[in-house]
Each structure stands twice: as C-alpha cells, then as structure tokens.
Image 1 (spheres, rainbow, N blue to C red):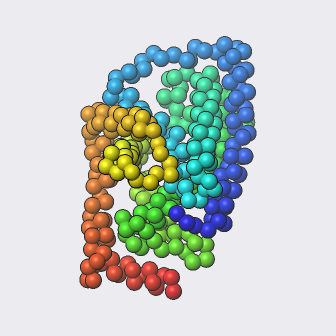
Image 2: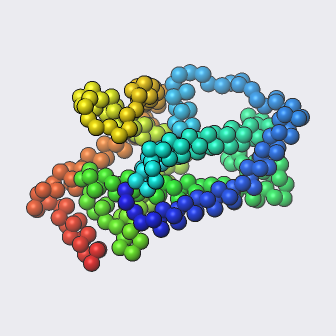
Image 3: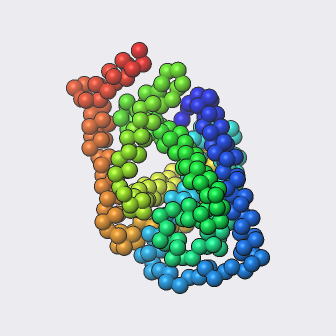
Length: 313
C-alpha cells in the first residue's frame, strides 16, 4: 500500500528506539538466567505438575502463544514498502521470529528461576513481581520497559493494520471513505481513526485472555480461508503466472493447523468463539450499506464520496 517514505521511516525509528531502550531489561534477565539457572541449579520451579493436557485446552493455549508471536504476520501487510520483498520478506520473518523466540524463552526461564508457578499465577503483573524480587530499588524500571514494549507493538499495528483497511477500500472491499489520505503526510487518516475506535471498543472487555480468544478465532478463521485460496487457485488456474511459487506442502500443513485452532475451540469454548463469529458477521451490514450499494445513485456511499471530496479540498 503506497505511503510516503517519511511515514514509514518515522515508524522504523520509533521501533528502533523502543528496541534500544529495551536492551537494558533483556541483558539483566539473561545474566540472571545464566547465573541462577545454570550455575546455582534452581530448577525446582521447572515442573509440569497440574498441567492441562486436554486437546481442547491446548487449542485455546495456542491463541495466547500466537498472539505473542504474531508480529511476523504484519510484515505481509506492508510488502509494497519493502525493497526486493522476494528476498527481504522471508529474511525479515525468519530473523524476527528467531530473535523474539529466543528473548521470550529466556525471559520466561528467568521468571521461573525466581518465581514459583503459584506466584506466577497469583501475580497481576509477573514482570513487576519478578523485578521486586530481583532488582530492588530499580524495580520501577520494569513497568517503564513494559510500557515501551507496548508502545512499540501499537506503533507497528497502527502502521500495518491501517494500510490493510486502506488497501481493502482501494480494492472495493471496504467503504470508500477509507481510501482517503491526509494530503500533507499521505497517511490514511480515516483508516487509522477506525483502528483507534476499534481499539477503544476492545478495551471494554476486562478479561484480556477472553479478548485474545475472541480475536484469535476470527483472525485465524479468516487467515485459514485466505490460505485455502492458494491450493484452490493452483488447481483451478494451473497456468497462471506466479512470480513466487510456493510448495503446496506448506499451505496444506498450515490449513491443518488452522482447522485445529478454529474447530477445537468451538467445542471447548463455544461462547468465546461465538463472539468471534459475531465479529466476522458484523461486516455483513457494513458490506451491504457501503459496498453493495456503490452503484446505486441514491445510495449512502455517495454521501461518503462527497465527504471525501470536501476533505481533500
């Protein structure tokens, strides 16, 4: 989705600053890991007692894990901003996933080196409890770094998801008002505002894990439907020009995993998956109000087009 280079550069600078500021928290965690875990042998908290092993529970656990590691997926939304995406996109995904996995695993190992499973479950903020136990008077730094990490995540999501709305509107799949951009900065302002409104709506849910399950079900059901198009098109249009030709083994494995994380939660948690279905179905009235009536001269879409002209003028 084309945007101005200054906009993308500013996002990259913000992300880099957040990463640099987060280094002081990662370094003490790694030091504590090697000192306490490998040297002192504090392994008593690394236990799988009372672990839920039911298939239904595992499927729901995947939502939380996929939420934490889902940053790689947002790279696909800004592929037009990349130089040589055929080479750099897989490289960026592989490097980012590897680094995030290493940091997350080391961080969790550090937590369980100091805290017991009961303390982790009973803590409202595990990182803060960990900091109080380890860093003493410098424990206040942990909430600051957590806030910076959250800011970095919001920064990236606003950049990518707003472009997703903008691209969908340009393709005629979302209301045309979302194709509007701010003249000076060339930023898709209406799409960003929609993202902000949706975010505030999600804040009304007090249980973060319930929210992850709502959004997770809707997200992976949609992604699974999109991935299903790959083998379908390969079968229906085998001679279609494909600059990037993917081995069908990968989408098939992905679809199997997607079926697992969407069908099983419908049995384990029908209420939460029901809310996820409602989130998807809520797009139907939007489609009929703003898309299906596009060619109707008396339709409401003309009003939005007129607003767009006024906004640009």
